[in-house]
Image (cartoon, rainbow over all chains, first blue to last red):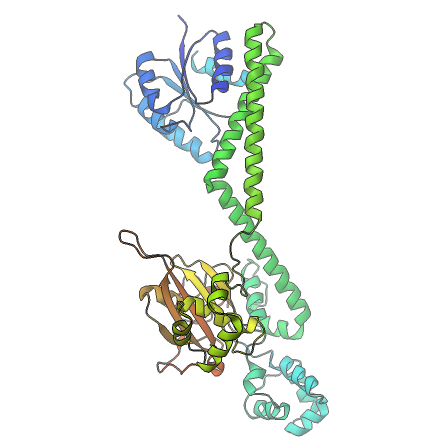
Length: 119
Length: 384
């Protein structure tokens, strides 16, 4: 059975390319564009990995990350953001992110990171 | 304030009066060689000799010992305190300014330029970090670039891609390129707008159009002289507030009219300087760090109360000050008033106003270059 990945990202063209890449790598992909709806999707889908943006409509990625880490069975979280400042990385790591990556990314790099996390 | 520039001023006044060193020395009863040493700031001067020289030159003694170069000396002190090198001869700054005025002006000019550039860089850095428009724009542009890069990489590296998928990726690159272009144009427009001053200048000679309309210059100058430069009377006559009158009074000399030369500082409650007009004898720090004992800051503790004070700088020069804090915007219920405090000042011996009865309050320029000991308001160590 394929590992499930939820992409929480508001930019449709980034969702499109990530979905294409990760689908070809054999993963089952879903996505959510609204920050306020993200936790519902996490609870319903029970993904193995959440690829999470920080600046989302209606809710910050940091708040979503905090809620995810408080789940009894929490999925991995790969934070993928244009906010690459040191303090953002530190905040994410303090909350409990699995991996923190910045935009723009190389396709091979993101696929390799996902495969490593879900290996 | 050090008096070691006195010799330079004596030399200037003697030259201006068309007197030779020998003639002035003879008239004042000292040797030519001694006068030469004095004029080169190699001998101190005070008391009878100073009074005698001032009398022969036809100038007040204070004009030989005070003020004219204090701003230059203060700037040199600021320059010395801005570097960590211990080898700078801080105590000789006044002598340096007196003996090498050209080099001193050059050094002070380079220091001011450097300081202004540092402030501009700090402001830009702060803007890049905290400006919401820039943060949003950069985030948007990075998202556009991410989508373009990832999609383009797919198109160039993946061979088994369907025609439909290829069309969607082509369309995505087109869309993201256009958005990136729009975001870039918006950013350029933002900086262009910032680079074009569209508000009233805060330079010393700026008087708002409103001030000009309510207090026509010639009429105001005449009324000011008749009222002995009484701001309250002028505010009543011209039906305006005291801050506007302060700005107009400080502007009279700048506008080339006969009037006492007045300095003016206006600050907000955060201590930021909104209007800065220094006197040569009373330099104002350009970027904050002013002496907290200045009446302009006391104004916030007693808003809307006119205050007249006598203050004394470390060099002994006394200044009369008029201060009042007024609301900058309309007062309304439920919103805290936004006060600005203004202090108009000039040397006591040039003041057209009655001398305040209370003794002069000892103040400084800023802590870094203030020699006063045991000052309870000190916030940092002095370099002196």
